[in-house]
Amino acid sequence: FGSSLATAPLCSILRAGMAPAEPTTGQPMLPGDGSGGSGSSETCGLQSMMKPLLEHAIRESLKELARNATQENHSGYVPGSLSSAPSIENLVRDVAGRVLEEAGPGLVEAMSSAEALGGASPASRAACEGLQGTPPVEPQPLLLDLSSTPWSMWREVMEDSPRASVPPSPGNVALAEAWPSPPKLAAGLQESLDSDSSYGEAEDSHLARKIPRSQISPLGGFCDQPIVVHEGLTMDSRGAQHLRMQWQARPKTVLIVAKPGDRVANATVQDMVAWLSSQGIVVVLEAKLLANLPQLRRSSQRGIRTFSKADELEKHIDLVITIGGDGTLTWAVSLFRGALPPVLSFAAGSLGFLTPHPLGTWVRTLTRLLDLHRARRPLPLVCRMRLTVTIVRRGDGSTEHKRCQVQCLNEVLVHRGQSGSLAKLNVGVDGEQVTLVQGDGLILATPTGSTAYSLAAGGSMVHPSVPAILLTPVSPHSLSFRPAVLPDSAVVTVGVPLTARCGAALSIDGKDICNLHLGDSVEVSMSQHPVPTVCKNTASMDWFTSVDEGLQWNRREEQK
Image 1 (cartoon, rainbow, N blue to C red):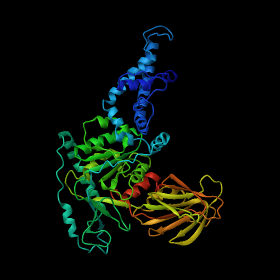
Image 2: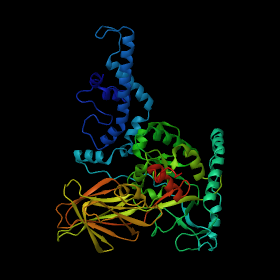
Image 3: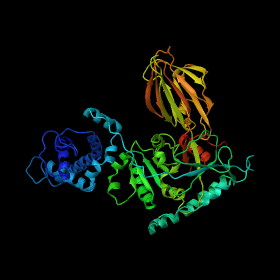
Image 4: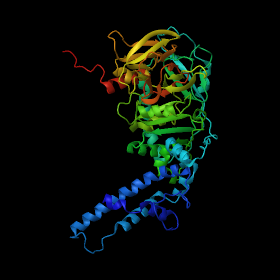
């Protein structure tokens, strides 16, 4: 079937279904190729949009061919005989027409829009622009009409703490003001939300048992009021624990990032978009995700948006929702240039150290987070430390040192790359040379990344609220080189000495970044932009639960 189907002009058939029939010669043309065949950078975006549609059409054609072959065999059809069996040409044409009908009349407009063009990968767009010899088109912001909702953050002091005598802040009285009433829901949806109210009450009583009633004190220097966060969180220190947060008004804009190619995640995204839209919330999706879910474009729902690289998301997004695993959260964090809004992660991956919320309870979780029952309960929060990685290129005397910065959530890895020789790395802390690493490499990890590569290399597990930088060697050629824990104020420099036999390679959060040549170095320090993630219970309970379930930590039969 595959060899026969390959001869069918499927692309021409799809084109014929969307436009008046035209004679086609030579190679089949995709929509948007143009009559002259000159092409443009827009072709890559159209190809990216058409790929899922073509795959679906080919898949349906193969199924139809197999179904016809089975029916013919049961009816006594002899291959090669003259009968009324449908030809491959007619079968493919019928399937293409059916697929186009399912895609809807807005397919051509969607593919020709700027949002569809943004769905193409940057690499493919750059390749097309390079082939055509035209300069790249600067993306335009798409979310300028949206603004983020401020939210407050403070620290709870336990009853037995010496600071518990601090009187409650008068600024918290303003937090109890009612939000504007949400839009009225359908009867069925309202009943389902009311049935979930017992879940929220049980969860809050569970928190009350685990966390004693306490005085509320501001974060940091114990000022008169909690800090109010505008356009993402920026902190000079991560020493605060038992954090709580609360929006000052109902969130207006939510960014949803889902695990690509996952059927369950895509189905949940569609349900979640419909639910959030019913609450009057604007939902922002990645262009590629929106292109893979054309039914969202055809639906009557309003308020579904996408964004471009020119948008400063921290100025427009109130909440980030991730559906997937730890990698999905890491990708979502990388979409922001600096500060981030609160992040809510639903588990749809493998281990899920960073995704404490079960996917099956997303309605209950969002009901409580959006405070649909108007309980005005603060949300538990953990600020996950990030690292700022500065790459410094060695100058040649006539040129200055070149520098560029990257944000890191898990770990920075400087390793020997493809070389078979030992990596030789100079390590300095706060401007002082401390050691020379000779081995496969060196890991600088955050507390969040302590349960990843650093743990596999022999490093310790560190609670995400501990302000520290982990220094873990990878296969050191020394029995005495043990992992170390540095304060979050440390500035660590890892450089390739001129006496090394080879250069090194730099990887950040599992992604290869660049090669380091002799004389190049990497400076690693604490970032001022942590990742504020919403907890399911508390920071400690979520962390120990993930370690227990993901690593079977300290699993042993009890002694009798």
